[in-house]
Figure 1: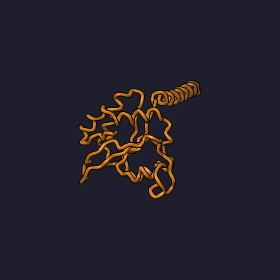
Figure 2 (figure 1 turned 120 degrees about the vertical axis):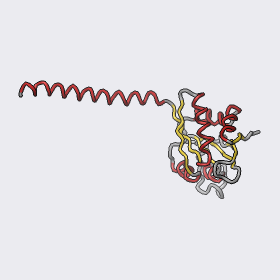
Figure 3 (figure 1 turned 60 degrees about the vertical axis):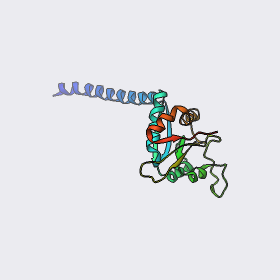
Length: 179
């Protein structure tokens, strides 16, 4: 019996060491492969268009991934105002965009929020979402607190470009052309 204990103790230590090394290497691999992650907040009415835009964008950008959170526009605006991590906001409710825009007056932005990166707010696409009775206009803007400004601007440029026209058409929407 003592001879059996003599082999079990080193074997246990060896197994424990192997487990620690495997856990340590898992964490390191995950950090390296993640790269740039864009956090997009999009309204429930934009699911089809945004999902297709994200798929198309990811096929063009091999090092960036996109994480989308869908909810009601007011809920998403409240999260942005509270400081939740968000890079791009897409919604059809212009009042919610106004709520976050420092360029708007106190009548529509009573909290004097300054959450949108200047010059990035745009009317991007329009259409009738599933279950809706009328056409809606969808706005997008880069959030001022973004840690990925360059990639966020790149994504916004993509959804405003000719390259996105086929994506919108396949989703039942159309891009809004800006002057």
